[in-house]
Length: 275
Image 1 (cartoon, rainbow, N blue to C red):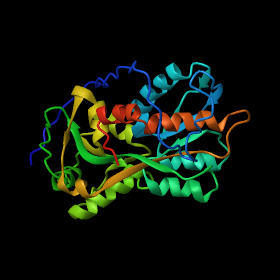
Image 2 (image 1 turned 90 degrees about the vertical axis):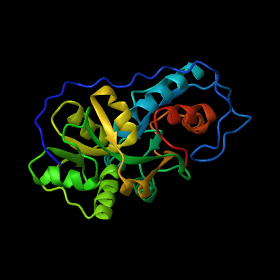
Image 3 (image 1 turned 180 degrees about the horizontal axis):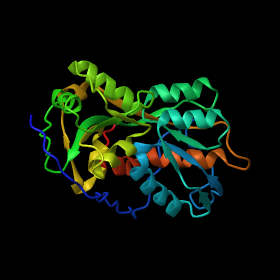
């Protein structure tokens, strides 16, 4: 493997076209099944606050727009995207939200243990890691071993911190390959890892394959066999400690959309894989 210097400009994130078709009835929600005698799409009112893992941002922004079309009387608050562990910490510390979607089951179990959930969490999609490099792969990284050599020779390698789901998955991949990344920069969510490679502040990193797609023409992904056995399941749940006046039926309606065929289609198109 040879190293060459390079510069890279900002990448263009993938544009997501809004789906205009009417939604089919949803699947069971995070805290129970949808009530067929409950309000129809146009009868729901109130507000909705969603906390979601950073890797879900493109999908959830598209789904949020879809939800607003279907429920025009609901006030959808700006969604909060961050590392799953950070989101759970914020909620346990008193932040209020209606729906939580994490990038791993361990983080959701932490939320359940803190008494934050109104019911059972439901897995709704999965994701796996890829090595992300600049377009053209100027550092010729083709394996996890190459990534380790790049880090050891002074290359700029960036990964997620171990306490967030992408970081835990990264460590599993590194352990399986018997590789260490000396001096690698650690970020609190996967979006920060991606942006460092997109912006030219890092030569390579490990992110979800959905994030590689999100990086557009500025980056490309390298499949590594060790990642195939490290699959992150993403669960979603309705939260118990909602802000005053927030209706649980509104939260369930968002989860229903996420689990519906239309919602799953959005996730499919953005590179996620059904559980």
